[in-house]
Amino acid sequence: MNASSAGAHDSPDSVLQSAVSKVKRHILPLFVIMFIVNYIDRVNIGFVRSHMEHDLGIGAAAYGFGAGLFFIAYALFEVPSNILMQKVGARIWLTRIMFTWGIVAACMAFIQTETHFYILRFLLGVAEAGFFPGVIYYFTRWLPGVERGKAIAIFLSGSAFASVISGPLSGLLLQIEGLGMHGWQWMYLIEGLFSVFLCVFVWFWLDSKPQDAKWMNQAEKDALTHAIDAEQVAREAASPVKMSIGKLLKDRQILMFCLMYFFIQLTIYAATFWLPSIIKKMGDLSDIQVGLFNSIPWFIAIVAMYAFASMSAKWKHQQAWVAGALLIAAAGMFMSTIGGPIFAFIAICFAAIGFKSASSLFWPIPQGYLDARIAAGVIALINSVGNLGGFVAPTTFGLLEQHTGSIQGGLYGLTATSIIAAVLVFFVRTTKKHEPAPGMSGTTTPVHP
Image (cartoon, rainbow, N blue to C red; front, side):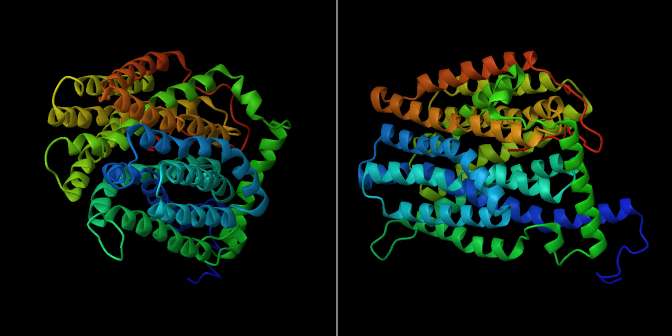
């Protein structure tokens, strides 16, 4: 059966399902790869901290502040970026985002001072801003509501795999020397330019709207377009007044979701940016060995994340599962303060089981509470606020190490915030406030950021 005749005698539902399956096969693998590359360019500075300190004199406080500046820029420019994307189209804007972040990431290879470091980290945040809501927006134009939660789950799993890949990859690239450049410079340059080259593929692979897709037959294009347009009409009929950021922020439940996710992200980004430094204290390890050790907690976390998701699906009470995961994170962070570097590494492996699982288990709660008409926008808002933990955690840890020679106080703080989040989760609603409009469907599919 060829593309032009396929679906001619099929039922509307089967034609729509065929279209949805093709969309997921065509775009989801690329978006996961994009997110992996995005995440590596965002956090790779953790593997070159000691190199930059040796070659450029960038100390712990400057490193922590520079690491965090990315997230300030990301939060400030996320909304403007999202507005521009809706004007020019997701395909053009996503390609632009990837191109500019790749150029800025590559330019990190040529920093000479703390000021250069600060400026480029801030610009990297500006360049990347809008990537997450851009993908969410793309899903809204290509997938019916019932499929979007599953797609978001698969897409956000990229960060977990990036955490495993980034260590060994960066360790290998750090071995390159030549042309007057050190290994850390080659790492920045190669990883940044890979993003630039990938954006060329993105431009030719993605289509602006379903009717442009040559890999679907006309019946599938029409079925998909009709389903998505019908949902949009239902949304507008049910809610003629657009939800603004101001209105969303008046909802106490949404504020609590933002606060909880902020606390979870604090621990994740503290581990992301400072774990390589803790590993280096374990002994005389090469960059490759540090990278391999760095992958261990994240690999354990991926296994635990899916195990927790399966168990929470079998035995309900989502709040209790999130609280349990957060208490595991708190216990691991506390234990990392009472022993040497090797014991601290083992403790953080244990903590990773908790904080990555908590991040995964958290998302079904706001998804279950939110009306499907505003779910995508609020998820982007929660993600944006939560990512500010990426500024607070490394900045605080850097100042602590600079002035006290230890990050122990920061680990105590993460222990406390994880416990607070474990308590807060019992005060949030887990069911929809209102039923979705006809033709709309919510989802409680776990998301794995």
